Image (tube, rainbow, N blue to C red):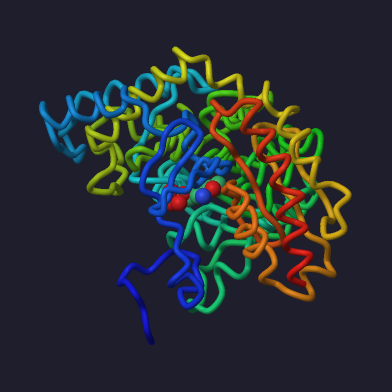
Length: 422
Ligand code: PMP
């Protein structure tokens, strides 16, 4: 085993990475620079989160001020800090269901696992402790914590790490009737929650069929199954609205968010809980239930100060609706890849997110082709993300015509490079 450095990268073939790292040293707006001084269009907004781009002085200022005033304080029991209180109130005021409560975590995976436990705790506290089963979707991605791995529907992510927890199952991501059938199979009296990304992100940028989200929300309501909208990617403008799921006329019981809540500058997750689910824990009655759950850094004042400054940026710069305004220009840009001999499909047109999927022949011949395509795009000065069968982009909401032009010219050139390697 030879390695240049001790750093172990997530989701990486470390043998291949070593010696070919892209070490990013600086960021400004929609661009980042590596340690060799090369500039890239950050077409993935890092990991789907740099929604207002990089290097905003408002964040530096807010974080610095907070560190000077109070560098840390937790939220356990009676404890609180001002930025956490203020941010929770602001997030709740934006939520689709009035009166929502906000439970913080350190990131997306934290709030996913919180949502699984809270769904079960809610039913336990309302006289239905047998409602514990959780349903996810094929290709769903809900982080890599324990329950998030189980509710996710990408088999490779749950393979080789021992048995998964019981009482999780999956339904085809594009079929609402399949959800109703699965609830019937398990028994509605046993099902606690259904987890659903409005647009599946890491699982391949898979758009919901027309009417799908309304239908699954109604099915959940009909069977008293909590509808958990995982908006870790979809929120904060990615789909052109505050939470992503609020593009549709549905009222989720819980919304998970992270990433763009601070533009990724400081780790933070937030679980938005509709009042009916929170209510048993807020009665104030003697012996009322306590949700025995929480992470040390959840609601960290520095992270919440970054969150407050982030909401200010989104509001002041009018960035949230751009996720919808830019969906057509992005779809036009990535359509430059459509028709290429290596490309099976281009998916775009719902929010500021898109994917290019390689053909079955390419994937069969070389399962590593998406990584190679990502590398080829990097050589063209554009950072894209490799997914199972292709690459995805989710640029900062501040990106404009020059950046989308760059993407449109880079994709076909990178595909040509990949074709030349085959
Ligand atoms: N849910 C979704 C939809 C995500 O995309 C992610 C992260 N990409 C997560 C959950 C997990 O978030 P984190 O990586 O912050 O734990």
